[in-house]
Length: 254
Image (cartoon, rainbow, N blue to C red; front, side):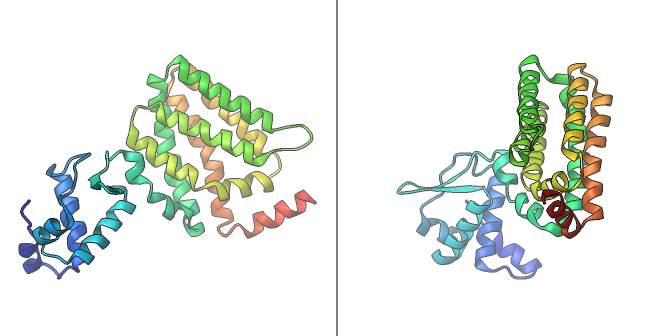
């Protein structure tokens, strides 16, 4: 492997040795020099090739492990992962955890899921439709007349949305949606607990989406999904810190 670092240092601000490692290894992966499953050279050799210390090499490798680009196998060395979309996009979850980003990310989710519903409507099969039906049945079970199991309902709700995304056949789109769904639960829980009837109306909207998927109608599936998620987004905009919603939730539980 031939390093380009020296030339780049001359034309740009100097990089730290750790940044050099990250930059170069990412480049080698992008250019196909190191493909999925490739084993990196031994530490001493790789450090010499990149012109960095072994300590800096270890720091750069650790960073790329956290990003899902590399994986270390005890006693066997360091390898490029399979570079699947779900693993590479998982760091997005941290951004989605930040409460200040809730409304913005819910807006992104609405855009992505509206299109995923349209795409899924074109290709979804009977088996996938049955799985979606089962997810909604679990959600119904969580909505007991005497009480609502919010956690169980939200688990079924997440499964419903993720299964639709996976039915598109687009792994990158599905991974993006799955990360956003997994990290927006706080807003969804607050909304479900604070707005009277929100959970049951959400379930009604789910069935409306499923009906359009069964009809393989991409336009109506898109509209139904967008309307469904717009309510969550508008709630997050109205309650950016969740404080009003949490107060309402406390009153309703009393």
